Length: 357
Ligand code: ASP
Image (cartoon, protein in one colour):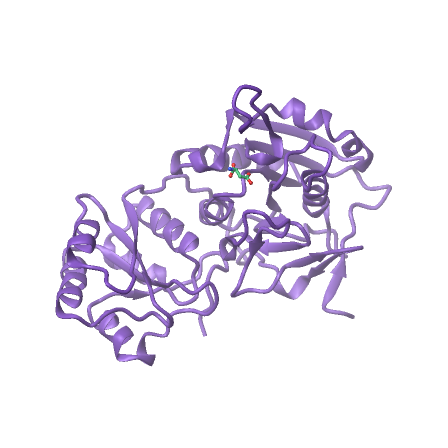
């Protein structure tokens, strides 16, 4: 028995896998605007016409789409809710879901969907591409076909191989809420620095089964669409001033804040800064400490500069990505929880997004 399992789609006698494609836009379906030469989102039909071999998979495919499709720079919590609802409404009728999405904010959407679709027991696979399908040289065709195969893959027992929100891109399948876009040019556009790939896609699709998330036993799939938009991100840098930071932390209406800190979760110990953070927490806002380092996480007690934040009431984001921290805050406040409960829930993994030792 090896730890890895090569993808097996349904046996020839089994019914064809039913996969719903959710087309939101992104480069994968773009074409050039003849007037400006810039890439703009285009129709799902155009995309499908350029991948005739998709029929050879033998799957039952259907699709839903955003109207109009968007560049993912225009993604928002309201559109996440639309996408989550498209999946939830079709949940019982399909074996898996492939979400076609622009790469720019795919990691945010994957994080958001992982919290909006709690206890999902079917694959929700996001993919896109760096070059549009239809160009002579492109990565979209392979990414789309591979995502469909991953959505159709089954375990030896016939259960869905992937039962979580994941990003399939280039040669890797990543947990969605652990992922970050790392390159605007490389065909391997995503990485998850704090969790290994869920699968490697080379000659075979090799799943690392022990790394895959499974829904908590006895817990039902229970979509939650509300996301609180009054959540922000503040970024520290050497020389940051009170004049720059105070308006961000005191922004009216903001309920939660991701504070991007240095290294193991460290921040300046100047009095104005410590006071400002303590005042923000006292004002009832949830401040979450997330490191600017792509890999590793917050260890507040390691340095006095991090400990000061903990003492001011800042919540450790451990090894959360910024994308996941932001989406998790939006989700928890969206559930209507008071600040104290949000703070407590930020420390507990909801969908495999953080490592609690
Ligand atoms: N701007 C595009 C988007 O995020 C980039 C891409 O899809 O790669 O929609």
